[in-house]
Length: 499
Image (tube, rainbow, N blue to C red):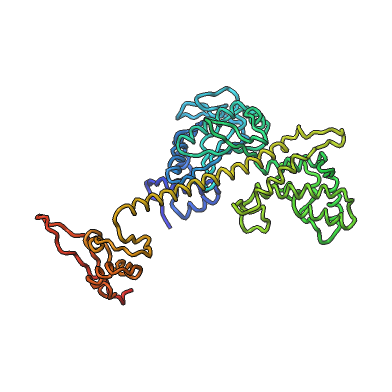
């Protein structure tokens, strides 16, 4: 237990950083822990963070933090993706007396401001693909929604600056908001070419899979999905739910009335969408069909649900311990690539029909096009990562080969990192063994066990290295002032019993 100094004290940056993290997790917990340990006050933490740069732009301190990380990363650790998203803000004006500046107005960085209140912010985050790291380099305050022109300007600027400090930006990720959709159209991103060119480099575009699956669920409640002469209808899911809730032991225990009739807020719940578009619901539909409880036409709904369950598993893998193979992380031997190719062909067949108006609304649903782009980009991203890893392995093999070639080019009869079954009968073998190299006698003895030439045996036997207790450490000859070689310096090794 610690006690506060009467006249105050000085806290290190590490202590302040810990205190800030603890206070961010829980203010009540920080207040309790402060009674037991000597921690900075809330005012001290606020004063400390007020000195940090907090402008609405890609700040140099953020780049310095990422640069420090990049310097310690391997080539695969530098592979990253830039994520961007908008968050809602509570409108408020605040006067910063230290900077003589009013905060809370629209701010796009580079001293580009307006008199409009900031109601939302667009945040950019760099995220490692292979290594687990993330850093938000910039955020911008905007009024209402951020336009596609601003998204393009700030995103390309962030990609350029992150590439300049050594990162390898492979892609960009976002949700399926209207401004991001417009940006995708302006950049010419399509399911066939899910990328845009920046500084002669392909940058893949990936939409957020949870947002896509949520949009699919919401559209399924309003429209019918037609494919391969089959129809997937929400009426089949509702009929299954009415049958299931009458049983004491349910096939789909997670389904509730919230899933069947979600209100405006519940429609934003990804959890509800994944529980509906799940393997258990598809299996229950097929069981109800086989039992005569549902018509055979409901098989289309079961097939659609099963397909989207596999798609979401492929795009949302998290752990190796799950029994579902598609929900495991992608590997070179997994079936993710084949599954995504099959699902991509399936999505191309889908026609979304408004049954009330008998109208095809497929082109107006942004989630269908976004899903195709995401699947194609994910496959391209996997190929790119594998190519980088293979090129790294080839480079390592090339460096090892060149190193071995360089070492083999010099006259070294015995290489201790790799002893070969070869007899060396060079006339200089004894000189190389004893006079020129700093060699441990124990290793020489092991070399003699590997080699059997008479020259090596004679050289080693002269030094009495065959007997384990007589193993010496032979050092490089020393020169005296008169340039005459001194006798070999031999140090006795510990006795054999020591080992």
